[in-house]
Length: 479
Image (cartoon, rainbow, N blue to C red):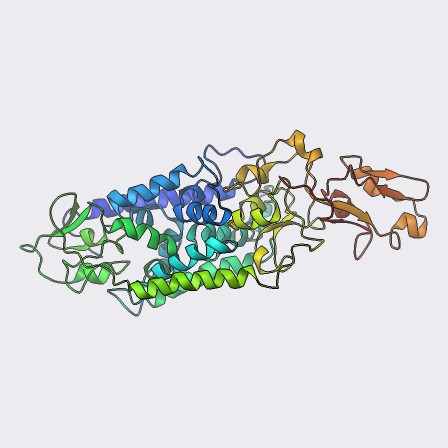
């Protein structure tokens, strides 16, 4: 593709910035492991998300994560001056779609204006109204938790599978292998969004993204404007055809600022150099038609959905195996604050934290739960509290862990090798870092007031197919 006169530099600058930030995003996910040594917080990109901040705070009825979410406020304020520059230059979801569409050589059937540009505004209204009454469901559509979850829990476990055979041939140490519940689902959902590009480029960004809708509102009044020199313009319509987000048309001077992500493609491809951006002059503006009645109906739908979800009979918060991470908030507050980003699950050194599937009903979907049979909660680790962006898991010091109770270990004496068969086992006593499992002449016992529910006894119990000592949430103490 040829570049317009002087337009290539700004386009390549945008690509360089976009690529650098995407690599930073991937590096932070890769380095979200114990010990945490990144100069930036591992949840840095989540802290840039104003929708996450507003939605989770509405749901929790308090300002969450402040001042950690100051960058999100700055992103929102930047939209008042620069429009949706975050979407075009920073957002890892948008970059993932760009890379995916190019890698798969997806050619959209439609070029030009978006087919359903108003839908994202209705989704934004529905999601925010839902947050007012029921536990938030932003995690389903908010792009930052979405893309973080996809890479941290979906694509990351694939890397060792692919790389380890090569590393072993080179006599290098293999990478640590891990796996997560629903990991392939999270990766598959992102791939699905890429495939939607066969209908329109960046179909997600154009029509569905609620964060894009939030940033579109101040973008309407941003002073940064697109200008077309009509004396130079030959109406070749190349800018309209090449626009990633359908922000142009029907004419080359018609511009929808709430759809424009400042990618500068139109500046780059114009053969006459007729397109520019600046803070002076008038631009041909053509806004997205957002029907007020439909917007109100979307908000009403959010309220009705909230009422339905709040009274749903699928709640199973008392499930004995619903073991939350250490120092998690009480369940009601935890469900409101947790955005299902997967950071705590990714950082867990034993992979004991896993996305919840059906243990707690729909409300607990994809929230972190401890599965001791996969990995215990180590006594010298506090990483999950360090990476949680909203404080759903409160930060704590390692020395505080003996006083943080996730649950209690119980012994099934009918299958225990000592109690049932008189064998000399006592593995649970040997591995317990808190001395909660004690040896008696008849068999091991658990001191319930000492046990914190870390699960190391369950993880090491030799009884098959199910361990004879297991952890339940009974007796838990939350933050």
